Length: 110
Length: 117
Image (cartoon, rainbow over all chains, first blue to last red; front, side):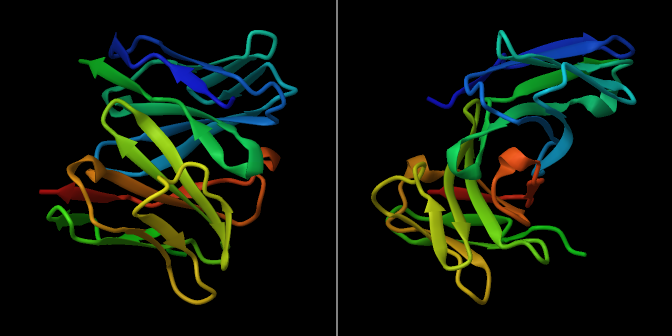
């Protein structure tokens, strides 16, 4: 079945790195996504990775993909208080919809 | 270019009433997705529609819930005879083409918070 799993909560200090982990089930997924949800808002696409890559870097964001273990991670370098949000990983399900994990709430302490 | 527009932002209904949630996709987008978000449960897929067609309704409860995306006008998610358990944030998203496996990007609205008293 289609399932995406994430840990629910992560707390870091400002300036530290944050690593948010995700596991997925569909080995045929071509793209995997990270979305960010700020309080009271909808989800915004943060970054994505194509399945034939194992790493993608975009400024402070690094996405790592381990296809063998179906494990995806998002690393945020030099985490700021403005990074406090809920982070969702997502994979395409059948029929083209996106399947989301439960979301990881990132709390950044000053 | 306006983004995905959802209204109302907040909707309060009493048990047994009907709730209608509207979603206007981004300009040029013909694919609409509805998701429901409950606290600590993440975002659950409900239904995927293309103009005048339901593509995937595997996440829709079998009773009381329906969705449409007519040729003209917004997509509507309709909940009949609401119960307290329907209280949640309902998000609409749109894309310009099918198959998010091909890197079609999904854009979200700000959601409708439904509260059932």
